[in-house]
Image 1 (cartoon, rainbow, N blue to C red):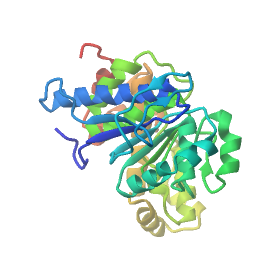
Image 2: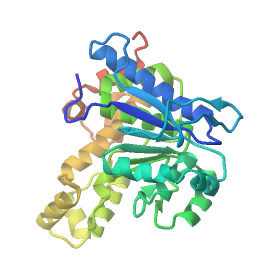
Image 3: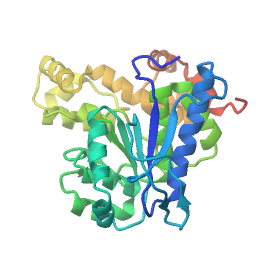
Image 4: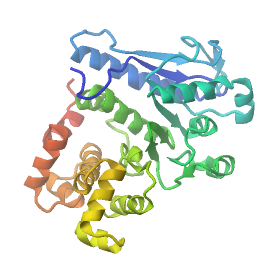
Length: 332
């Protein structure tokens, strides 16, 4: 069954250009192929893939990877629902000069509602297209200085391994790209498929960072600077004990004015927004650690583990233990 309020995924396209790191290209291919098979099984299709995954190049011709491997592709740039921009090692100015159609393609597909994802240097394509102007982004640490010089209009966040804004997703490196693909698989195929893929591929992955919360970037694309400051404050203090009345007063607003402005800017009531921050953090802790439910409840801001469990079920349709078991069970 297709997840509610989600347009069925028909095609994922992965860009292949000269100098591409074949490992990052094929990593994305494997993640989404496995998701396509699992989702197909869930839909009653047996082992028939439920959506297509295409390797595409600007001219439809094979490309030579960073490690000198000739990579065949499925065709030219196409009408994908999800676009993956793998990492590459090449002269970016030369690539743009040879393949200006890539930038037009990204702008066209973004306008049509496609999710666009860049890994490390792959983020440069999104920035060059202008899609990231005025929006938060990240990339691999080695390229922070070059990225900031090239794209001064982009809000480069050097503290994050993942970012999202307006259906544009950035991953700093290989491990964070894995987390991003799982997030997108959950978005388009549902939690059980995402958790199955995570079990199959990521069971032993050890992160040097917290997976982080993605999915909130689109709610920051507004012009209310004070509310944006409060959103950033909530991301840092979501587990603290505080009253929204005090937050409003600290920012020169009455509680009534704050509630109205926050919902107008973000589309969410403040309490629901806070709950989502806490639940998304809890999901990461449940899947990536062996901490007890009580400990996780406390770490995300809830002293009452029973209340936390009820709230978690409301947001995910699973109990915390069910969510964790789906990640840890190896039998499927």
